[in-house]
Image 1: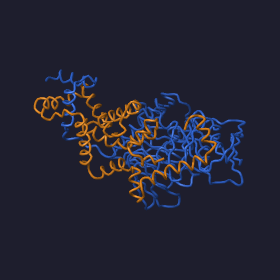
Image 2 (image 1 turned 60 degrees about the vertical axis):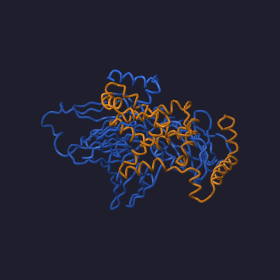
Image 3 (image 1 turned 180 degrees about the vertical axis):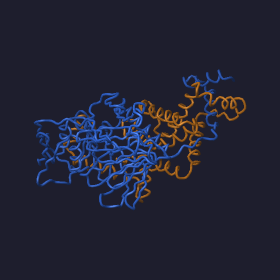
Image 4 (image 1 turned 45 degrees about the vertical axis):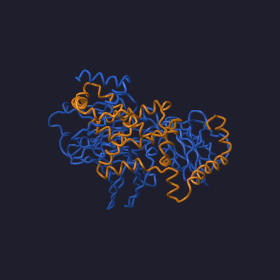
Length: 385
Length: 195
């Protein structure tokens, strides 16, 4: 058998036109064939690859945009109810009958791509919209947006005048921050991508060449997809703790108005250090820490719930109203006014896109019966029924 | 949300075939590392391994109406992976890697040909298990965790020392209670033909 015949044989297999004997031959060879000397394929690399394919599949089949959850049993035995058209799914523990009563004199549009890039020299660049390509240029500095909407900050070295102070001295830092009602994402000098939710920031060195590590600071909620580099660890400082990457995708939730800091590992491995405590996470685990305290609590969590924001939707999973309203407040840039005697025991379950006006989200929350919403200007009033 | 871990492969397949996206993702999570391990062993290339694994699951989704793997999900996934890898070998750039081995097999090892396709599938499953057993312990632990974490109703019953029927009854009762309490909303669902 020569190469030509071999190729024909394989093509027939591919077309499903091979005979039984031919199939037997190829499939038996397949079982028999062994590769010797495989280059190392580490656990982290495997987890990374598995996570990448998972994301591709979810995107391809639009999984997670509208979650269709059939009847499912949990310890509290909650049921997911499909309500109405447009695919809104909402559930609640203490369900009673009622009607839709949301009054919306005005409506509030969802957040959008909005951020401020503060340079080391104090200059601020306001970045809005979705235009691709070069969106800002000054001298050697260039801010571009790629096809996926991710920003990149680059310095065109050839345009720097010799002797220019910018290139000497200690590392210069920039800060990308998002306001309420904003979101953004940026590729750092090493290829790591940071996704920012509303009211968040990441402070990063312009390039990582001046240091033995890659160190950034974060506030609010940021999702990192870190480019693996074993010789230069990636470290994130946030609210008194340091997260060290071992080749990794993880989400940090560290808002000032949230009671705890949540660091969730999606894939790879991270180590968290807080004072004297350290914890190493496996994918699917979340570290919970509190300001002023050094202990780190690690638990399993639903990473889809944690990363829903980055994928463009809200996912409430047994969540209290206040927590939900804080998220709405940041994304829609509104203030919430609670009634005097607020019942805080109600929990909500559901999922809805975050790219619709706020009235849609509020309508769904109202259906369950306990609360009524009134939008006035940039305030949302919560009222009892 | 994580209770799908308690579902057996067959239950997951049934759910998935009825359109349940979460069941599809659970199937992925359960088998991805195993498939990646085997794909890498055969292709020696991370990018190719990613491509074939993605192709296997893309086909799984696209052909969910036609697939009949209720009783042997792993077998289906393994053979799908094998067929994908074999199909790729036909490409010139990749064929070169395997030509010598293939020709040698045809010329000297024809005694190794297995004519029964069911036996070949069984051998494939054994091979994949052996590959996992050959992994360093820590890595193997992670594999086992993602694969075997699910406990069927049978296993829950064994662990809690109650009958399997009790477990199933407990599950259906919980459902019944909720239906009664929900009343109006169930009516809505039936109205929209969603239940």
